[in-house]
Image (tube, rainbow, N blue to C red; front, side):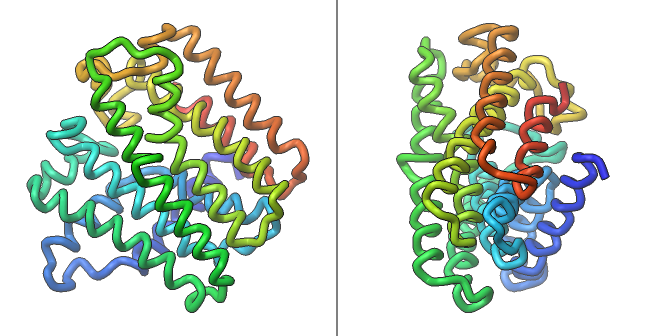
Length: 296
């Protein structure tokens, strides 16, 4: 099985788990559950929940045990996309090749759907001691880290600075601040969550954190590049939106060639962070190559 096929198979497993942890589309009141399920199942490669599973695998953990945490991360990620797409934020009409939640259900329902997804993610996590027998202290640590990754020192903080920087000249330090929080924080906590719940040592956790930080940087740079040269039919969202919104991006600051070089360097750093791991981290290695070569 090639890596893309393996990634797709893992995404199917995650989708099945997501379907089981969400209320039925007909549960009352149905409007909110329709909007939630529409957003969650609009597509996507499920990179972040798969990283939770791979983080567990890398330290000898059981992927079934950490699956609720994988679902929790994806619910939180989907909330962030729903809110980022709103007219007050990035004002996008397409997400994963389909109308964004606010286009399909209206702005008010999109806001509520995002709120529901965010709160559901922590509810799913909080049930891990009972549902999977995970040590409560590990669960509490992951809940805390996920909250920080989503909060003002993470995803929200990155989005605030990103919005405030529109139209301004941004230097490399500010660009790194935005992306390590808006994108990198959730990638980092995904890998760490799977490892923490599986009893990783602090040394293992540090190596996996270094890996995730570099992977997140590579992912964001490639995302920026695809917004310039990508195919809308392939990437599932309009290209050129960063330029229209005067967003700070790596191609805008450094040019396409230098941005590609930075992505390659970040990928190499991610791979070197896994040198102390054996075959149990092979999927993480393959993911680096997938990210750096996706849709280019």
